[in-house]
Length: 269
Image 1 (cartoon, helix red, strand yellow):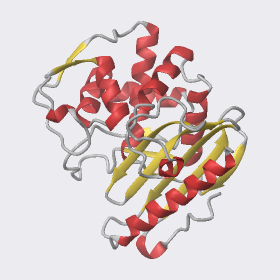
Image 2 (tube, one colour):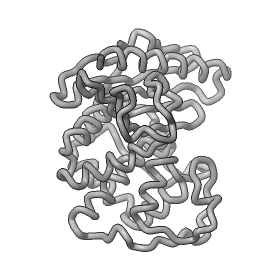
Image 3 (cartoon, one colour):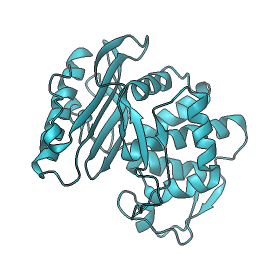
């Protein structure tokens, strides 16, 4: 399944990949699965998990209003371009799930605290996967070197647990999956599934998907669960390479991720 994922030391390209049966955790394929690589926005899953846990426990109201304030961070997201200066906590989470909204991420992280997200990850048994920091336009030497890190083995297992509603209970797991099912980035592994990027919450030709991606200079990551009539496959495919490598490396990575998605799709049929 992962024969297309080839390390290239000359450009620093390394892969971490894992696919498993989402119902049983039975391993289907792996390559460098225990490597912990930079995962960019994939770590936002952990923030959403802690938020959903608080909603389910009654520790936080979904309707709690959150102010954008003077939050200024670029790249992915919509809130930075919206007139609305206030959103409910649940709507901010929907923005993170749908478009990996950076402003909403930071506002939610200010609400729950990075320490709480770290504790939640530890409670889930994650040792190679973490959200390390808030989103920053400029990452300086005094900041953590990446927004998040993770291993494909841990992330695929986490995706499978969410699929089975086994992350802090049924209610919390279901809410996280609902948020992530809004995701619009199908540019990586999920490009092979032939789904509408803007509307794939319902089954299309028998295929249903939820996923979270991460993108940064020298990073592409895609984690999720694809379900077909034959069953559900949890996957995590992570790539990290030198940020100053030739531009063609990104194209090669995306091609390999698409071909891997083809194999994952075939494995689910």
